[in-house]
Image (cartoon, rainbow, N blue to C red; front, side, top):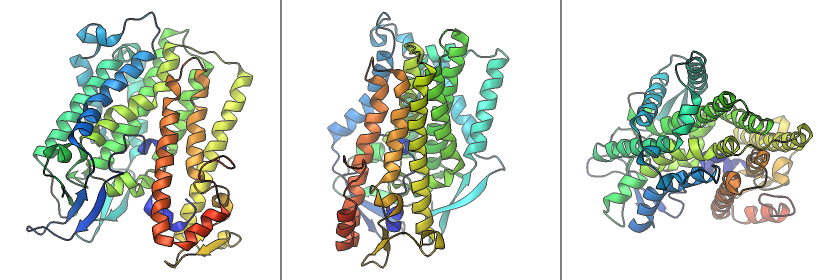
Length: 449
């Protein structure tokens, strides 16, 4: 995003915050001051219909199980035609519940900073407890200790991968029903009304509250960070320990993917505050689709390349790993440095560090960056994201397209998001934005796209 104003529209911190099914991109939003009870209401004209919503709600989990099943050896039986125990058991439900309760308890750790986020409906900024890094480290330590002491076997958890997905679906459904039937109303949180229909399916699937809270726990922040990202890391750790138990399955390719993932997740948790300005966090209510995505899509789909390598080991030479590491490193640097430049320029465009950068004056009074990282492509941070996700799929080889699906989804969603941002900036900055696009003609990939 080649300007400081863009960062206020969407601050991209991670493709996996965007990697859920895009829910409200085609909806029309407008703010209504207050309803009859004095509560702030966000009016939404949704273009979703019941058939599409029903398909997404039902098929998301089923498609994920089929993708995971496709990673297994062709000699294994197809899980959906196997015994019912392969896709459901109460042990898996207990595991997901215990993980959720543990993360809720760790949310209350008396460590980490309290940061202010968006403005609440009561005129005060919402506050968030940012101790996700500590919660992650304690979760890893606890899981590793239980494994080392022989209390649990990682292979048993991996064998239950399909029932874990089913358990995540069930708990997502229960939590979403609770939010729908017993909505949490606070003075700081806006309600969402869909003005083109009174259909309860929209409120259930897309959400009817912007920022519901249980005590100090912001539910949207909780599911995005604690369930989604920490859940992703715990699945990677489980696969790593499974490979150790299997002895012959621990390979350089599997280690590379896990290390890349953990670097990415740790960077996100260290800069947890950045999630507070993402579009999903600031502009969208929380409903079944968002909760389901965080319980099953982020942890299981994001770790798909690791699961693929566990089922179909691919041994690569050390020399082959060097260019893969270089690609990931280049992507990480582009992502990190472009975000640093963007955020720093947004905070203080008069900082001497940016004196050598060329800008265009916008009719809004803002200045648009047209040099530095944003003179190269208009969305360099998105390019960095794509390179990183592609790098951690390469160790899987080229025998199947399955481990590359996260990269394809990443590119498609970031492409759509870039288009949305550019439409918004064109309306806001007019000729200044057209001039920026003329000077920097490429959106994502230099000389290609």
